[in-house]
Image 1: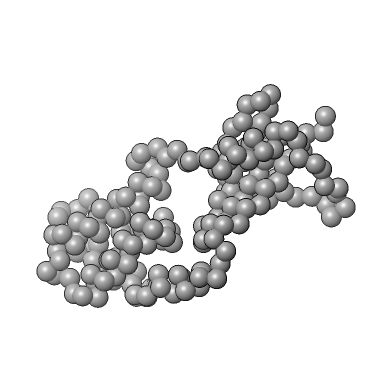
Image 2: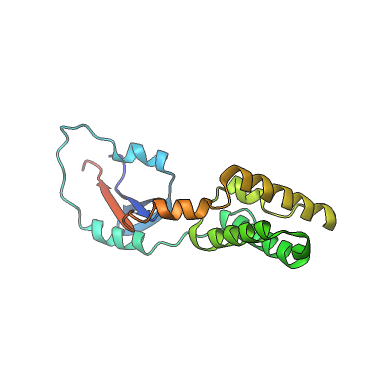
Length: 182
């Protein structure tokens, strides 16, 4: 391979994490990569022989296990989740009397998902963030977005997902080491 690294794919519940730890001269740098980028890191011919792990493998692997992503505030997925959760809570606080039980229950499901399961896409979460319009209009737009989402994915979407995942092993880890030809 062109560089020394450890590639780790980790499936936890429904989430898939793909990380790379590059190591050179005792220094280990961990970074997140999307799944498609890492395909080139693990390609090999069927005939290629397995190599033994280097001395750096377990140190790099431990560093990957302890890796916590660093999000910049403002543009990160984490802040979108927080904004969506805050918008939904604000809607419940200010407009609860105008919402029916179905709306309230679905908003509760959305909040539970955002906090614990993270199954909603970034685009979906963006639609759950209050817009910059005047107070009355922003809540009406958010209610409309919630109703559209509920029609599209169903009121019980989270229960359906959770039922599907009950038999999924909680944690699966695949690690591959690439070495330069020395």
